[in-house]
Length: 219
Image (cartoon, rainbow, N blue to C red; front, side):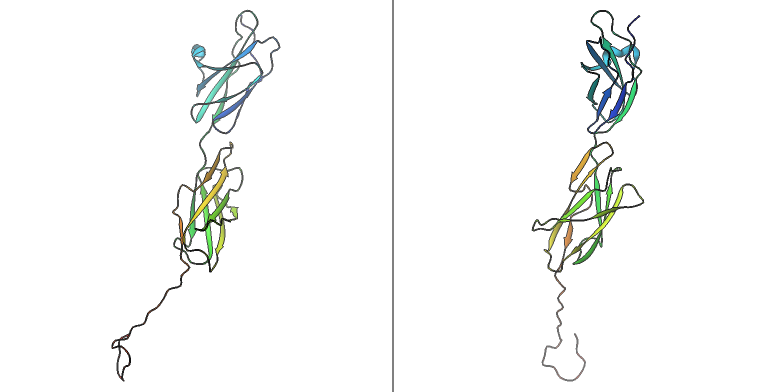
C-alpha cells in the first residue's frame, strides 16, 4: 500500500484569489505535490489536477477564477510509491475588488452649505471606508463616514464654503473587503458633483421704460 497521507491539511483564503495551504510535516518526504480542482477533486483524474509542488509543509496558491476550489496534497518518499492523497479541503476564493457608489443630498448641482453623502459598497468591508471630495483646485477634503444598519451602506456629510470653487467636484474612496481585496479611486456610480456658488441675479424691466407717469405699468 502507499504511505499514509499527510494530516492536518488546511486552506486559508487570502486576497487576490489566493489561498494558503498548510499541513503536518512528513520528515521523510522529498517533496509535496499539490492538486486543485474547481468545486471538488476527482480521485480518478488526480494527475491531471496537479498544479504545484512544495518542499516545505506550506504553499500559497492562486486560483484562476473566483469560486470554490478543492485541494489535496500527496508526499513523495525517497523511494517507492507516492503517498495516499490527504483528505481534500475547500476554500472560497475571491479576487474581485470592491466597488462603491456615492449619492449626495441635495443632488447635484449643489449650493454652498452642508451636503449629506451616502456611500454604498458592492460587498461587506472589514472597516469603514475612506471618502474624499476634491474641488477643481485639487484641495481634497476628507468626508467622515459612519456605519449604518446596512452592512454595505455608510453615511456622512461635509460643508461647502460660501467662497468655494465652482464647477465639477469629484469623489475618491478606498475600502477593503473581507478577504483583503482593496477597492480605491473614483466611485463606479454617481456623476461628479457640480457646485454653483453664484447667487441668482434678478433684472427688473419696466414697460414703458422710465420715466413713467401715473397709471398701470408692466414689470
